[in-house]
Image (cartoon, rainbow, N blue to C red; front, top):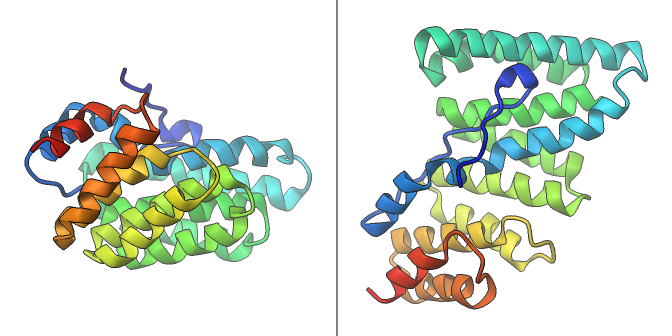
Length: 229
């Protein structure tokens, strides 16, 4: 059931997303941690496929991807030595800022924003993560699958900053949309957020949506368990 993890040497790293839950939800999160931590990283893989189509379209695009690859390798190296996301964020911040500033209109620059948003989220700079995910929403928001993944990153960034109202807003945008990707996860995350906010009725409604609308969801049994008390 576990997902295969792709390394940042392939320009993708799955994040340890910020999840704060209680009781049975903690046990569930620990059991299914791989499945709970793929969402933000997935967008890098999806967008990368599109971007590589035009990899050799210009010298500037090629340079952007070379710099991005180097920045990713540097991040991996620092993380391997320190195991400290904050230290790794500090180390690669200048590298990513150069790519984002000098190649802002290119695919390499856009992907750098997504990746650095994820690095900021891991490293605890939640405001910067939110800003970059917002920009990425403008870059890729026309595609519904990309949009849901970015909205998910935005929601996690605000949750990490204890901005539960904003986190709920972005998770709600996913479940209210027409595209099915991440909907069951968003309902589960909404249930967590509503629990934090003391909105028990809304928490139960979110759990019920998993049971009624997503019978194949990995969250189905825990939703049923939580609903039954």
